[in-house]
Amino acid sequence: MLQSVEGQTLVGMELADLRKLLGPEQPTYRAQQLYDALYRKQVADLSEATALPKTVRNQILALTTMGLPSAERRFDSRDGTRRYLLRLEDNRTVEAVLMPEEDRDTICISSQVGCPVDCKFCLTALMGLERNLSAGEIVGQVMYVARENGLKAIDTRMNVVMMGMGEPLLNLDNVLKATRLLTDPDGIGMSAKRITVSTSGIVPKIEELGREHFRPKLAISLNATTEEQRRQLMPITRKYHLRDLMEACRAYPLRAWEKLTFEYVLLRNVNDTEADAKRVVRLLSHLNCKVNLIALNPGPGIPFETPDPDRVANFQAIVRRSLPCFVRKPRGRDIYAACGQLKRVSTDLVQVDQ
Ligand code: SAH
Ligand code: SF4
Image (cartoon, rainbow, N blue to C red):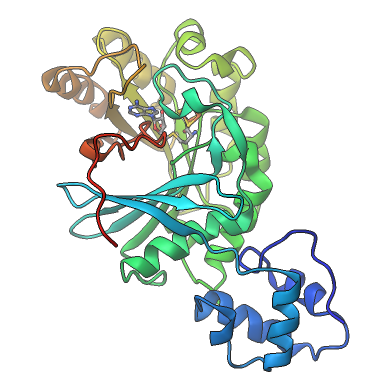
């Protein structure tokens, strides 16, 4: 008899979960065979898991489903970026974005449906939180986009960033389980060096993440350099003060190969002055980190403007004197795929046949 697994789908189960599902009557290698089919071979359907007897496959399917997402729509940008609207088993949808570049492919995935953190410059914030994604739904986005585009997880070209919809550290257990599944050499086999999680600054969860053995790299959305301005732009700062956030960053146990990344969204005439740039340096220059500047990607209902390119260049020049500092290229703005634009916008867009 197979054991009940309370609403879990196959994709998202670790070996121990699969052992529990198969129960004590099955030989122990069965769970390993199933794990191998799901994550190393990445079968689209359990019928392709031919190492398992058909009777066992049927028993499994009587209890649970694969749980891979399906594409509701795909939008192709002029710059090669692809935005997927992925349908989950409860018919909700999330976004995943592929950004191909010359030397790397980056898959940007979501961690929640919507987001409860109310950042004033972000389109996803307008949705509020609908629900957390399961570990399987997080991993499933990577598996889906990689398969659709012929990407290999073990290839060092492939990177995953949890910078889509949602605040990953408010769904930390599932994010960590997804990370273990993505990085298991017996399964999907990605390197943890190529997975990044981005947070708005949930201080106790940063500390928790630092204690984990299997964890992605950490990026922090700084976006403002004073308590007051950060409170205005990112009201979560009322609960998790900038001072405490910086303290958690100082105490964060970086691995030998690791640097922190700070993201800073530039809002015209709001946080893009020379004084802001100097405060960024003062806050960060003693940390082992780099800074990614993002000129605001505008959107309907966002009460800010994008700074002129020379203003962005000036900001970068100041920070660069003390720290590695890059300007993130806007990707897929024409299909609302760029940072902070992920809110199921689908009007006026051309649907690409799949
Ligand atoms: N919730 C997490 C991860 C998703 S947001 C976080 O906030 O870090 C990913 C990045 O997009 C963050 O750095 C955020 O500051 C940035 N962002 C949000 N809205 C944006 C916008 N309209 N233009 C440019 N970047 C934006
Ligand atoms: Fe949520 Fe990040 Fe958007 Fe803030 S920037 S609302 S944390 S997705």
